[in-house]
Length: 461
Image (cartoon, rainbow, N blue to C red; front, side, top):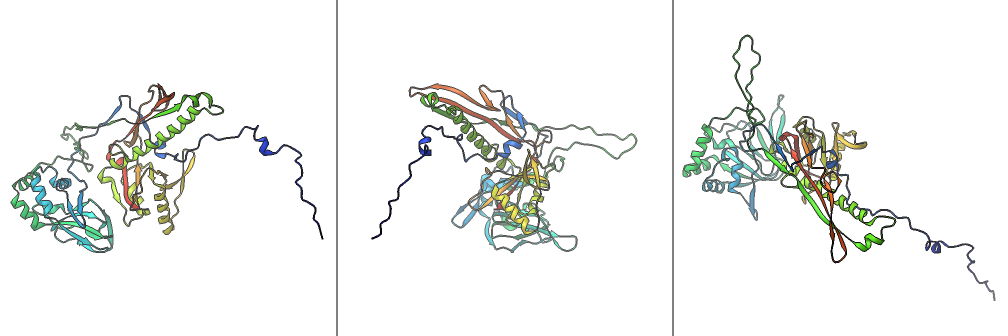
């Protein structure tokens, strides 16, 4: 019978690591936070000192005719226009008779179109007012060499055919073709005339609107400044003045706040090697700055997504954000400084460029490398939402007060300030030994002139 010697574990010759750790100090990092983003918007906006808490944007007088988006209400598959929303059509802007608006709204007919269907033909009489409830349509015209050129895209809320409300509608100057499935509400000319015959207030309003004296204005809608040029000799010069808007917009500083609570026991005896209060404050400030950028993008009062002029809102031609769409976006203003988009949108732009064999260059922003289009930095901003239907937006900005661009607003030098326009104020210790600090950030944003900010809307990512 063969026997095997017993296997024995050799005795340790030195102190083991498990025992040594009892006496060693663990090397540790400061608390980490996944929610910190690059916050490019906060970094690239020029910040204007707003000492009075309010920033007034004075502009030249502008004659607004009304060119808004119409909204609808749906009941199942049936869609109808909200009567009051018809005031977004220029000719109906100041119509106060709600009964007339309701009669007009009830006479629209719902239609469905498939991709490729033609709604209007260039040169044919304008015989109906069209409201686009859902979908995307392309405006086409004949090019110089008998090819088709694209004049623009219409989408949800747009309207076309306002001329049908006038005595001489004329003819369509473009062909309108559906690029996606579309739901359109149509008001035929004969129905409009029928409603106008039964609504004296509507007829009187249109007669007054069409006969009024239209103030002279430039192509931006601003009151004209009379000038003379090209003359010689003792030419009689006309006098002029620059009229101002009597109701300029004012932006008040908004605030993001929270109350940070730290137990006194933690602050007293658990502060080595890291100060617990300072680390709590550091992460709280990061969260406040993230909320600040979110509000600058999404707030309904001053957020950039809600303050772009309607004339500066574009729709993608085919759905995804193509190089053509980006070129159209930046062509709407001088000196576009930055483009901002959600990272998924930037990826979609990259895919469309790769399909065409286009490889955008990179540029340097604040010492780092960033994507660029036509030399304009394309910066990621995850605060721009990607909606449930997989669409998002691209922002284009001209920045700076000197260039009549987009500016950030804040006030520095506030009490207990630890960062510009952000302060931490001691609120005391309660009967549970909790130390409280009020942490506040003050900010807003202003668009100085309408063409400073543009949006490429509803791009598929």
